[in-house]
Each structure stands twice: as C-alpha cells, then as structure tokens.
Image 1 (cartoon, rainbow, N blue to C red):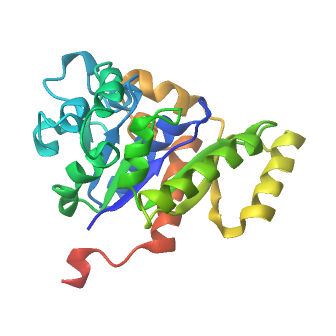
Image 2 (cartoon, rainbow, N blue to C red):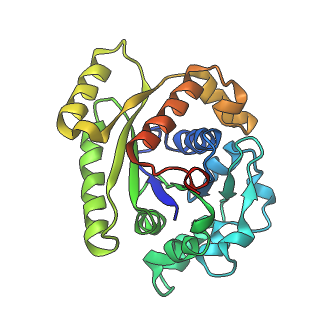
Length: 262
C-alpha cells in the first residue's frame, strides 16, 4: 500500500508546490511509482508538472464531488514521470460543496483507497490555508511533510500547524504523524537562517530532514517550463538537493522494493 504524504504549511510561499513536484520526480528517479495530487485551486503543481490546467477533461474536483473515480481523472506528467490528479479553479467550488456532502472530511481518503495499491508514494500538495481541502488531505495521509523557510515568523506559524495536525490526528486520522520538517530556500550566509535552523533541530531533533533545499534559480525557473528541476537542469543544486531528500526519505522508512523481495 502507498505511503501517503501531505505536504502542507498554512503559510504561503515556503516552497510547498516546488517540494511536491520535485520530490515526486526524484522518487520516480529512484524507480518508485508515484502519484501527485494537486489539492490547491491555483493548480500550480499541475502546471509545474507540464499539464495545462485550462484543458482538463476531469480534475480532483470531480473526484471529491463524486462525479468521477480517481483513476478516470489521472493524467501523466511526461516531464516528471509520475501520475497526476490535477487541479484548476473549479476546486474553489469544491470547498463549499464539500460542506454539504456526507463524510466531507474523508472524500479524498475514500477516493485514494481505490487506487493506492498502484503506487509506492502518493504526495498531496495542500492549499496554504486550513480549509476543508487541507482537512481532506490530512485525513487521507499517514505522514506530513512541512516545508518552511528559516525566517523570523516561521516558528510562530509552525506552532499553529502542529496544533492543527494534533487535532486531526485525535478526531479524524489516528495514523497521522509528522514525517519531517524540510528547510527550504535556505541561505546559510544569513545568521537568522542559521539561528532558526538550530532552533528547529534543537526542538524537533531527527524530525528535521538533514537535507536542506537551497535558494536556487533553476528551481525557480523550472515551473515556467512545466518541468521539475531534475528534467530542466539535473545538475543544478536544487535538483541535486531534492534527489538527496528522496534518498533520505527512503533510508528512513522504506521496505525493499516489491520486485527486489519477489
């Protein structure tokens, strides 16, 4: 069964979508089968994966509202090599519609259960707010990755997010746990970044990934070409960092590949 990871932070602009697209591509490079779920109405993960969000015949909106099965809405990211459950502006309407549907917090969980056996990893890109879409992601996941910049307000926002995850774990999903904290857009030349980084490690210990994602122009450019950094410039520091993150994740938690144990 797939490991389902929600990538979330209630603060925007922390590299959440960049992490989703590039981690998905990096896991594919290690021969894992990956599904990326775009749960943000902005559809940035969809566009960053090389899929036109304006030309979708079906999206995650149709899946959440029960009009389509997940398998009928999947598209392939040719640049990333992973399957994608795409999103566009239609998803904004789902936030309201979900409130009137039965099992509103578990719609994504039920939808993914039917296709999870096809994948080793399912990565969910959450919107930068705590709404019904984020609740669906956390109810479906068994791990949470929290990307964050090492800046002044980062720790304050982190406390609120951890409280949210605890509540979801208590009420909706007892299997939910923090998978790891990921330092993004990291610039080791600033004393503030180093200070916040040290505070994170002191407080969360090995929950903080050793891998740090640097500020990198190639990472910033790649989405405009509809590619993960690995396809855009595999030698860039950003691409190498996400490959290292995938390797660190696999060393932490993975059982042998099915074909190896067969």
